[in-house]
Image (tube, rainbow, N blue to C red; front, side, top):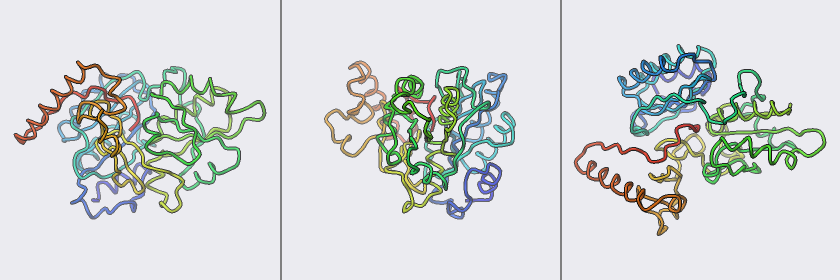
Length: 342
């Protein structure tokens, strides 16, 4: 990659400049930046317009969420454009410790640019939880294997059920939540079974990029647990850092963009995307009689009405006609998960 991306990595301390072939921008010309930071933003409405205008003027696409507690999102564009947007974001939330994870894409993985104001940058529904006040201990990817293999350590995947199905760490507990908002209720219901009556064990948690674990560990700390740990940089940093032959990760990692999944070295995975529900699709899902491209898949067919499927079918038709004309048609996504982590 060019000097722009290399300098970005040096500033954020979140990716290894040697992790990619920085001298080969031809095959993978798009820089993808997943970012977040918990930092007070007093006036989100005032911050939104300049940020959105900058992204659009520089051809950057993706989703950024603003809330009083900070910023979260994933954007993609040229190296120079991403550098400019990240500098602007640092002006909003401070120069230090903006969590950014970089990857490359062959084509633009987003259709549009959205900057939205939310109550939370990742929705847990626990307004008193503040990761800036008390949070679990960060564990670097290089030390993660030792922690989760330590006898007695409880390993929890804080992501949603459809993400866990694609891949997870060996031995991890799947809460089977449909959204992150369900995590506190799950923990309250399962706490006694998980922790028992004796001394509380170590609890290690992980998510895609780290933001959900910031809140999840803060929540467990508020519940009185002391030995709470989380994977710094999330699964993406682990897959980028740890060689496949040393990895305890099984499967692929779902990401919230058109790449769908990534594997070790953040290489493109093998899943497709259902355009109706935004869930990942295996090859066998695409051969199911319940699958119709852009309309339904085995997971969402029973969740949608005939009227909704007819609407999706018309949208799919218009996208096909636009493609035949060589034009871009951007239909409204029926079920975007913009409040989850990428």
